[in-house]
Image 1 (tube, protein in one colour):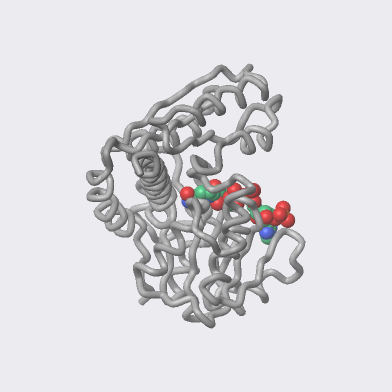
Image 2 (tube, rainbow, N blue to C red):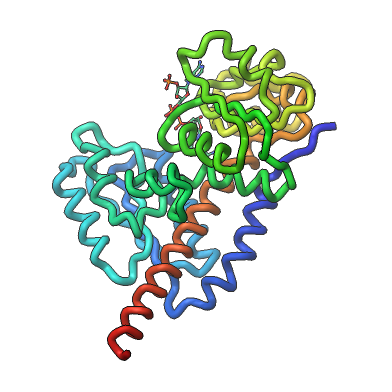
Length: 312
Ligand code: NDP
């Protein structure tokens, strides 16, 4: 029977590790979350991030500029946050309205406060395998593999998806842990055959249960990053045939979450897999908390050495 890789357990372990580190700081780490406009999905993500801060004793500040904001106004707001000493991490929730140049906004974040790890400076640190804030979702996946004692070294890892926030940093992290890495995308011919060569298969494509039995070799480890909401009854019944609990969720709420991998395929063919929900999802926020604590530690240590230098 395949082992379930439970993100909630790993998240709890991460929080236990962070609590004493937060307590040891001179002031609570501060995270500023910028939410432009009222996108309902983004509001839920931001609410969960603010909630996680409260749970861990981090100070959070939520800024909600209107969705008519310009690139210049938003970068000015970010620069103000860059200057605020009590703010250690800045997160600009994506997506941004069309008139805003997201790249410009990303570049305006002080790399030392870039807790999403998306700034090109920090991407460079990742590529060079130097310490720095890392993209939260893939670093959560690495943390999950470590937690469950799944070694990456010498394995063939196949990453499906090449986005800047998941696929590319995921591939780089696996490479640094000595996996042989193949990156696939929408132009990869015979995707199923390439996926079948994976010892570790990470899927981040945003396509409801597209990865089926024929993509998974017997005994592979499967990490399903996808999060797709199914609202069609027939589709839910097809995806979760025989799974009374999930079908009951659909009956009660009118929707159900499913990843990019067919749940039954993971359960039947893999040696270990991440469920959706409850797999990778909880780790993204946990790693955001870890990045914020680390940024606070680094900034407070820097400030202390500056004071020590002046005293000396
Ligand atoms: P993007 O849309 O930015 O990237 C999707 C990638 O998948 C692209 O590289 C695309 O290829 C590739 N792709 C799309 N369709 C196919 C296909 N049919 N065959 C092969 N490759 C394909 O998505 P993200 O990386 O942002 O997110 C991916 C998924 O992960 C989503 O479901 C998202 O909701 C989820 N997610 C979950 C998180 C969590 O916390 N659990 C956090 C972040 C994302 P190409 O480049 O050629 O277009």
